[in-house]
Image 1 (tube, one colour):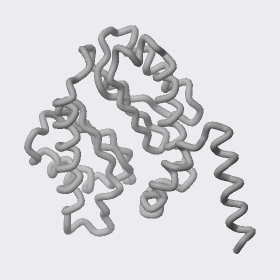
Image 2 (image 1 turned 45 degrees about the vertical axis):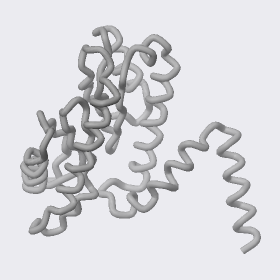
Image 3 (image 1 turned 180 degrees about the vertical axis):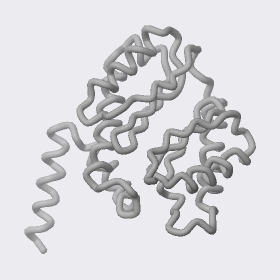
Image 4 (image 1 turned 135 degrees about the vertical axis):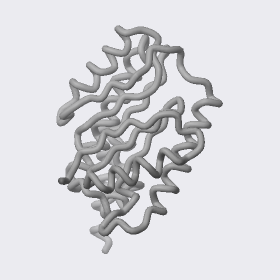
Length: 194
């Protein structure tokens, strides 16, 4: 048991020295979710790394980060960029940062050309996301369906739905999300299992 503790402490120190502490902490927090996800454990970990790497690249791009609100989500190597940026060149630059990351299979650049959304709008989006997730978790009658397999992101009233689903599951999830107050538009970014 003592050897196990030393090994864990050594790994933690190694990750901190290499700058990977945020990934390790994030990975530990999402370890339970990985157990019930339709992605492989490797894909799950890759997605965490992809998101972290893209966010880091955007943060280092001073012009882009200071003028934009960019949400980055990866699901099985499919990246969603959502939010606002003031110009088309900055929008394209955000997508380029995403495309340059290893294991990114596709980029959905849903950034809108606009000033960054207000704190009030972002708070509203967070509430919409919570309501949509709650409704999806309440779906019954679909054999083998688990609402935790659906990733939900909301930006300025637009709800993005991601995950690996059967078409019937995707239709029910979409219809369920449409019924949530505050949802203005739904964008389906599912990968279909059938």
